[in-house]
Amino acid sequence: MLDRFLLQGPEDARFTILLAHGAGAPMDSASMTAAAEALADVGFRVIRFEFAYMAARRSGIRKPPPRAETLNPEYEAAIAALGARGPLIIGGKSMGGRVASMVADDLYGRGQIAGLLCLGYPFHPPGQPDKLRTGHLKELATPALICQGTRDEFGTRDEVPGYDLSDRIEILWLEDGDHDLKPRKKISGFSTADHLATVAKAAKAWAERMPA
Image (cartoon, rainbow, N blue to C red; front, side):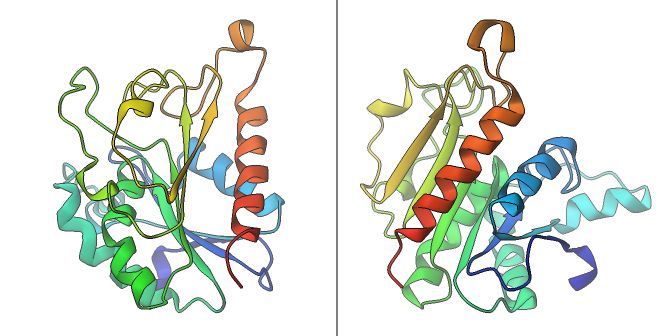
């Protein structure tokens, strides 16, 4: 497992963030790398890992992503292998954040994590707004920050405020951002780098509000 980690940021950081990738892109995709760099730039220790089905592609074996809930044990195994010192925040991009959200409360209850950070949460499949993936988020006890583009086809700013979500969840809306938090600069005036800097700044402020 340790050979599947990518590490960035200061080793003596107060907080470590463990990020899992989305369903279709690996841990070293351009969007994951840019997000990790932005978070590391504000002082987080950022660790990325891959689920086994994605890692297999590096050996020429292409596997479709399994059902998200079947990846819960792999996420927990990554946490154990990491052995982070100090407060640990778990999360990820899209599906990776969803998996983290499903294991979060058990880990938070045992004092193993401090919070949950999701980058583009997949509230529902694109074009299927009635198929919500929010049942476990209604009673979430773990402090959580979801960073979401306002035009994310997995959950827009018009849709998400109507969902029944725990009051432990904070949502940072990124103007005109898509599922990768990427805006159309000519329309919004923002670049992807602008939005990732906003994410990093907000994540740092959110983390520093957590109980010591």
